[in-house]
Length: 272
Image 1: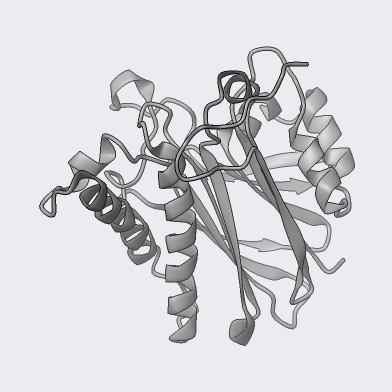
Image 2: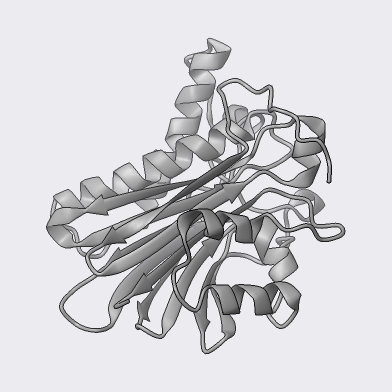
């Protein structure tokens, strides 16, 4: 065990967040945990997440982000985009939009980073490339619409390598999210906001009572791999039903050699 150092970043970033609850017949658990390397160095957690429940349409909106480590303010970038993306999706739902305009959602989330960079740098003319140097993050968003049918419609959109997975029958299926190392990007990096706001990948799928929808960052996706190892077996077992909120966060707080990145996970069950 290492002695955990408090993160010295501004604004304040807690080591761990744990959240969850139920809405519209859906059960959700969410957690974000600082990785071992950050705990040792005192660095801030660069992952973040956000949950929003839209009562008029019985839709749960969930967002997960992974700040790019090379950007010095990526922890703030992740916190900003999950909140702005969830708010933009909710505004569309307020207008009666059933099929979300994801490009608009990601544009608004990316522009929030530009505005923050302008404020911090004192440069009202700073653009996307300027902001990308200090604020860069992946983003994954899901809108889960709980209707009267047993199956639940899920709209997914992502920029970068934070994946959406379906856990069904003990097996993990990757639904969305780029593989690590995107062709054509310097150093095999990932696409990130705000620069890649127009490269949104989208998917629509159905969630049944026997499935669990998982939204995560690569800090969990990499040790999970194809789901057939120790991490996959443990998650499949423990997520067969919604665990206690604190126990859910503990699932992410495992130690495994070479895997010391921040980890975030949102899990959604229906009909439980």
